[in-house]
Image (cartoon, rainbow, N blue to C red; front, side, top):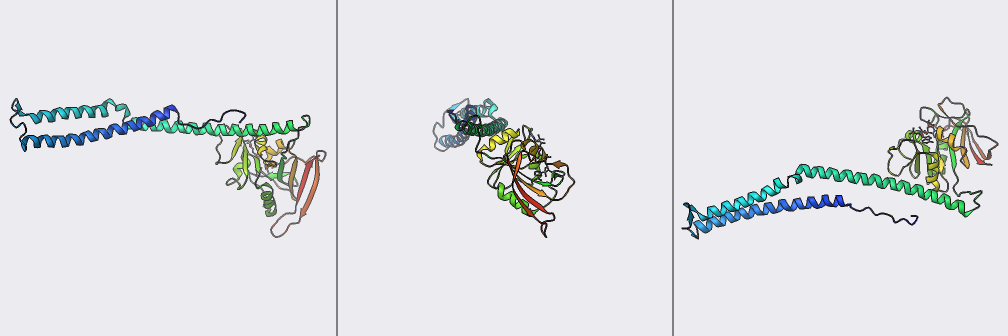
Length: 308
Ligand SMILES: NC(=O)c1ccc[n+]([C@@H]2O[C@H](COP(=O)([O-])OP(=O)(O)OC[C@H]3O[C@@H](n4cnc5c(N)ncnc54)[C@H](OP(=O)(O)O)[C@@H]3O)[C@@H](O)[C@H]2O)c1
């Protein structure tokens, strides 16, 4: 992107060297084994040549048959070969191999982390570039974007939205509406709201805001360090949703274009709140009342606000 040649992941020089060393080591051991077999066969043949076929039967040195000298010399050669493999090359022993393997694994882990970071940066750049293109393609003084940010929230009459990092009420129609509206979209949330889910919600791209640098999440979840960054990343979607909780709503209220608010007509005790919706800023464009019934313990209304 941006004229910069994308780097392909390649095996680097150090990794290649480790692999080559391991292959060389295997070859050395195989050769030693072949030498040993050859030595055994050679010994047998020399003994047969001398004692059965009478080759050089009378040839002795200091009263010892020549084949004993030949076998001894060969044995010394074999010992020298074994010495080379197991002593001279000691640094390539099992412990060395294990050490090299660990080094290789840690290098690869480092490479994976590096690629993950590069991917995150690339997503950010992509989002920023989309924002830039949007702004220059229209009047630069107004610079509207095609992305509409929607806050989606369920709020009690006294503005409570949660307690002990959990929702307080259960309204199945509200949950269904949340699913219908947000499915297929980016959903932006604070770290605490993310942790209140048993697992990521299906068919949605999660963007989690945290100040932690090494916050780990399941694959596919995007971690960012500010609301601004979350909004940039979500530019890949034309209609991302800001789904809470209290801290994020407070920061996002001045930036959002629309609010899909479920007003639960009851007061609840809680520890997290939604700010007042300022009628001077927000215009109510839709209001749909639902009376309580067998499945819904409280009256509630689906209300849509658009920024004036
Ligand atoms: N009724 C509803 O519709 C609704 C919807 C969603 C949530 N909720 C409720 O809301 C409650 C959770 O809300 P909450 O206010 O406690 O937490 P939250 O907004 O979900 O998350 C707060 C965390 O987000 C991170 N964060 C916030 N602003 C940041 C910034 N500018 N830069 C970097 N990181 C930032 C921080 O994470 P670190 O501490 O990791 O830095 C902070 O601790 C729960 O009770 C939940 O059930 C209700």
